[in-house]
Image (cartoon, rainbow, N blue to C red):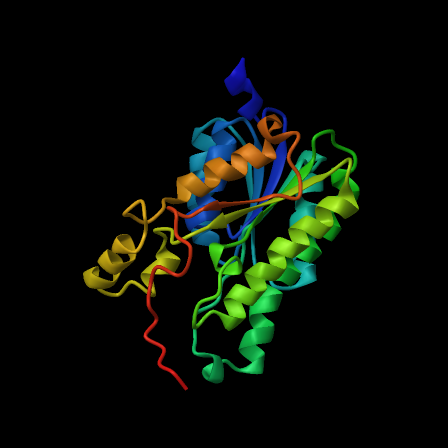
Length: 262
């Protein structure tokens, strides 16, 4: 059956940044498709809520609350997956983010932080998981990048550069890890999550983003999760080294940050 190719029965997935937003939606959708999940983020309470949802779907969820910016914290996710499930089939590198900021106001620390939070975390977790992924047929990695890594807009020198690096890392790892492990990336546009709420402080700002998006609205977390499911499942078995924009058709930032000329 066609839809069976999207099933993840018997699979174990590690998902970072899974306490809310895209990560939580991905954990839920993977569980609906038959996977057990190891989910990590900083906030134990949020993870507990996601785990309860996963368990209501008849799947197992193990939570790891802590700092995922360090290699040690990410190693805990891998160790937990092996201890609890004995295997890892899928890694979803979702943790990341960075606030837009004018270039001359962006500190070296902020730039380095954007690279570490969005790129080094994916490098570390993938490297730590590879010995276990090699043991599982169909194993794969899904990176959550951003359309900000595909176009240039004011205010995105740190975040956009980091996401562009993540996209390139995706392509490089697809070569390094073939033929046993596939690596792909989803590039979301503006998605209606609590992270975006920090920027959308007025209804007028949200309307401006809607107006500047060809499909006329913000994206939903489950729309990113569905794309991750394609990459992670046998439906995407002949796909590696690819990145797919799920962005409502934008070709640049759909929010003017109001950054003036120097």
